Length: 270
Image (cartoon, rainbow, N blue to C red; front, side):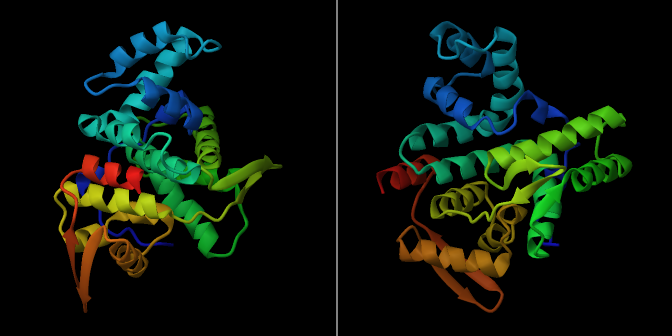
């Protein structure tokens, strides 16, 4: 199992069923980001989306659930920084980059998905297994409930539904393939340079020190350990985005950009 590298109490809120509002929502998120403008909150975006006609086959109730229960927690958190970054990058990065950024922000908003990926997907991958089964996923959720990770004790039907949401979300983000019998096949999932840059700079602008950036547990969402991350940071340095000095256990990073909007614009123009 990959180690949990860096975690604070604030990063361990209770697990919720919020994934039921929408799994990956990859295509829908693109349309909503296109409509979103800085300063909009979830209700503003809902009113605009209802009036725009961009979702003609979707009921108003379904659209509300997607925006208020899924889009807003994922992309309007932290003064809407995720939405602001995605707005800049929309249509200017490759589909793999876009999907990985949505995966990152969705995991941050849904700790149960983040922990499932770290503790089940990557553990299975590292062991050479080719599938993640329904039973393993249900077992993960059952253990979480038993350990008190949910604010209330979930019923058996809720556990089964959440297990399905976890597998479906991983499929939407490109970690798992189609359901066959009672399992989904594992798809190799390698972090892209743009995702590395956004993730690293985002941690830096949160105020983390350079060594804390290297050891943050967000990297484990992509199967990376500290030695892997350091190598990826050195590749960013070759691209001129940062300066890296590393000796023994100490890493120092010189950061070129002054804000997340700066790095997003730099990546979009590159």
